[in-house]
Amino acid sequence: YELRCSGPDWYEFGDFCYKPFGDKKTWHNARSSCRNLGADLVSIQSMKEQSWVESYLYMGILKCEVFSFAATSNVWTGLNDLAIPGLFMWSDEHIVTFTYWAPGEPNNHNGFSEDCVEMLHQTGRWNDKSCTQLNNYVCKMKNSSHSPSTSISCSR
Image (cartoon, rainbow, N blue to C red; front, side):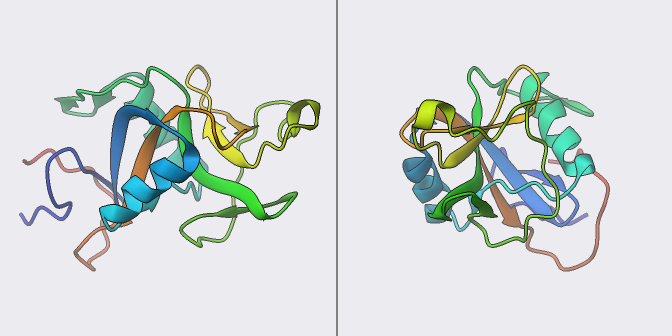
C-alpha cells in the first residue's frame, strides 16, 4: 500500500489530503500557512465531504485511529467573498457546488464586513465572519497518487 498523503497528520478522503491545525490564526494567515505547505484552506464540495470533515474534527476520531486534534474553536474554511461582496468563492478555486450555511447566514452581521467563512464547531454549519477573527483551520491538498480512492486508509 502506498501512503498518498505526505507527512504526519495528513488524512485522506477521496482524492484529497486534509490536515487540521489547533493554533488560531486570522483567515489570511491561515491561508498563508496552508499555501506554504502546498495546500489551501479546506473547500467542501459535498455533504459527504462535509460530514467527513465534521466527524473527525469534532469527535476527534477517524475510523480506526484516535485523532489527536479536536477543534477548540470554529474552523476557517477557504470560502470567502473578498473579491466580489456577496459572491462566495473557494480560495482553492473549486467552484461552489454545495453550501451548508447556518440558519440566517450569510448575514454580514450588523453591517460589519464578514467576508470569510468558518465552520461552527458545535454544528458544522457555516457562518460568515470577519477575516481578522482568530480560528483553528484545516488545510486540504490533492493527494499525490492519481488513482481514484474513496476509502480511508488506516495504514501509517
